[in-house]
Each structure stands twice: as structure tokens, then as C-alpha cells.
Length: 340
Ligand SMILES: Cc1cc2nc3c(=O)[nH]c(=O)nc-3n(C[C@H](O)[C@H](O)[C@H](O)COP(=O)(O)OP(=O)(O)OC[C@H]3O[C@@H](n4cnc5c(N)ncnc54)[C@H](O)[C@@H]3O)c2cc1C
Ligand code: SF4
Image 1 (cartoon, rainbow, N blue to C red):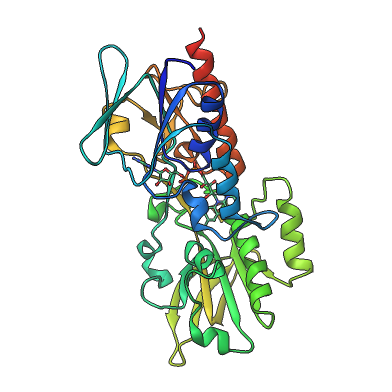
Image 2 (image 1 turned 90 degrees about the vertical axis):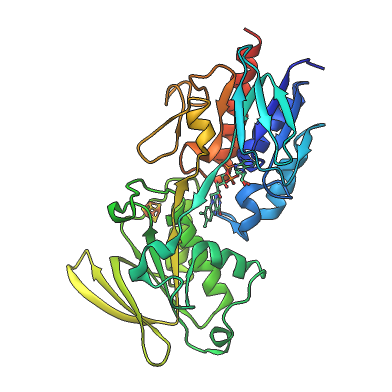
């Protein structure tokens, strides 16, 4: 076994990807993870686009790829400092410390808080939910509102770009994952409520990954999801408890007034970097607040601090496969640097 000790912070897809490569190369690896189970946001989703694979199964298979890792669950790291000898001192919640020769930061992202967009009624009207809430309903962890289950002809609206591409909420960036999540969830809703009609309001459809465009076509052809290029500006509740939506059809340039029984907001992915990463370890940020590697093209996992690597969606919105691969890439760069 290698004598070097490596710390990985965060056991989402990116952290697990890094830990799998490092542990299989004989390094001593400690993984520090805030929640009890490895998987990160995978444990919050039901089925993954584009092929509806159960998200928790993916988390389990990713964790199974690691070898003899010292896993610290329920361990939120609140501070890391760097010694003069280049080692990292990691402070655990109980005040104990661990020292590592190199560190992979894979702390992921935060889901946009939709109540910041007051005009959309989240937190005010119970039938306005987010894509993150809907994942829990689809997984059976949170019940659908009972009245919905009893209703015959349901009208469901899906609102794209909530907290992304939006100056007002302070996020100019595109969260990349929410267009395809909107398509995935529209299909799931049609399967769950066969008598429903689903209308999705989008700015642009950004179906960038393999199989995503096909899923978009499937939603229209096989599930009759209606996609309207439009921006929702206001949501209010009628006396009967339905959601009155004001929007603008941006293709035809005319206002839309419609009513829905359920509205699903496609919330974006925001940066969630701890202060110590920026202030104590010198990590730089891009405009959207995500972490910036040394060079976007050839060294996106390296940082100005020797021995510190970035992995996954802490650098910007990524899919599960991209985050896993990026974690493995961070580990490969670390191995190359160790062997120099
Ligand atoms: C609504 C929604 C649905 C999605 N659906 C899909 C889908 O179907 N398919 C798909 O490919 N992608 C999907 N995504 C994107 C997917 O969630 C991300 O690609 C993936 O979670 C990124 O993995 P990550 O490891 O970079 O970050 P994360 O999953 O965020 O994992 C990071 C982990 O690090 C932990 N952590 C952070 N800081 C610390 C600390 N200081 N100490 C200890 N632990 C820490 C966090 O608690 C977290 O568990 C979806 C995203 C959203 C918002
Ligand atoms: S992926 Fe789609 S819904 Fe998400 S921010 Fe980009 S354009 Fe908007």
C-alpha cells in the first residue's frame, strides 16, 4: 500500500468516483460525508434521466466501486487548514482532526430555494412544488396531495428555469440539468396520472446529452406533453383552490392565462462552497459562484494550492455520469502529480 493518505470531502457521485480510483491504486483514503449514506443528491431522486434507472441503485453501485476506504458518515467538515509542510488538517464535528497529504473537494451543489421567487407561489400554495419535492413524491417518500389522487382530469404545469438564467434571483447561469429533468418528470407524471394533461413552459430546450433529445420527442409523441415557449410571471390561487397562471407565449408574443391543479418548478443548481475552501485554501470562483480549477480545458481539477483538487458539481452543474467521471479525472490528476 502507498504511504500517502488522501482525504475526500463529499461522497456524492464525484467523491465516490475519486475514492474508487484512489483506493484501487493502493492509496489510503478517508472519505468525509455529511449524510449517513453515500450517494449525495442521488439519495434525493427517484429515477434518473434518460433511462429511468433507480437513483439509489446507482448510489449503491458507485459506493461498491471503492476499496477499503475509511468512510466517515454524518461528518460535516467545517474547516480545513494547510500546514507549512503542505499537509491538510481536517477538523471533524467532534473537534478531532485528521491529517492528509492531499485533498479532493467534492462537496457538490445546493438546490435553488424556490420561495425566493415569491411570484411563483412556492411555500404559499401547497400545490406549487419543486422538481426536488416531486422526486420525493415519485419515490413514494412524500405523499402526493390527496385531492390530486382523487381528481380525474388533472391539469399539471411545469415551469422551467426557476432560479437559473434569471438576473433577479442572482443566477445568470444555465443549470443544464433542469430541461431534461422537466421532460423526465413530465413523462413520470403522465404515467402516474394517465388522465392528466401536462404543459411545460420553457425558455429554450437544452437537451445536450446522449438520449435526451429522444426523451424530449418521446414526451411529445407518446405522452402528449405540450411544450410552450413562455415565461410564467405570476401564480395565484382561485376560490376553488386551482392555480391561476399568467405567462407570456414568447413565440407568438401574446399573453397566456391558464389554470392548473399542480405546478412543478424546475429549480436550478447553485454553488454551495464553504468559506474555508475560498479563504483558507485559496480556491477561486467563477462568476456564478462555483469553484474554478486552474485551467478550464486541461487542468480543471487542479487548484492553485498544491495537493488540493476539485471534483464534480462544485465546479458547475453536471449530470451524474459527468460528476462521476470528473471525480475519477481528479483522482487521475492527483496520481500523476504524486508520481512526478
Ligand atoms: C431536481 C434534480 C434532478 C436531477 N436528476 C438527475 C438525473 O435524473 N440524472 C442525472 O444524471 N443528474 C440529475 N441531477 C443532477 C445530479 O444531482 C448531479 O449530477 C449529482 O448529484 C452531482 O454529484 P456531485 O457528487 O458533484 O454532488 P452532490 O450529489 O451534491 O454530492 C456532494 C455531497 O457532498 C456532501 N458535502 C458537501 N459539503 C460537505 C462537507 N463540508 N463535509 C462533508 N460532506 C459534504 C453533500 O452533503 C453531498 O452529499 C438532478 C439535479 C436536480 C437538481
Ligand atoms: S437547463 Fe433548461 S430549464 Fe435549466 S436553466 Fe437551462 S434552459 Fe433553463
